[in-house]
Image (cartoon, rainbow, N blue to C red):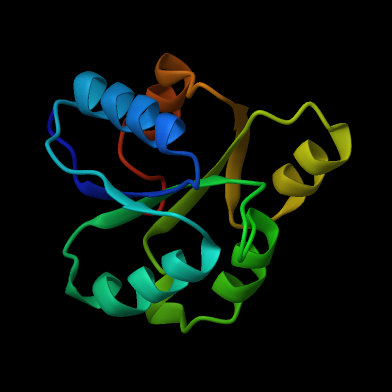
Length: 136
């Protein structure tokens, strides 16, 4: 599958990192998934790499993480420059069954959807293919 995006996985659990990246690599026939362990590392990654990308960025973020959780990440993401935020779509992944967290995630203007782990790959692909809505 031809894709015009880069993936950033924000996940503190190594097993979930492996499972999610394998699902993405197999379904989208891609070789690289960028992985960071928490929201703070994600903000630093975006600041360092986003302007160098010539593709849209798709972020898959866990909700509960040490250092900076998914909601704190969204708050910091909101404060980034428009250049860093443009052409970025965020999806949250969680093993939580907490209705409040799911609702809070889905109400965030940057979040495309909140999905349960493991990543429901068919549903996810249907959301990103065709390419991102705001691509020209």
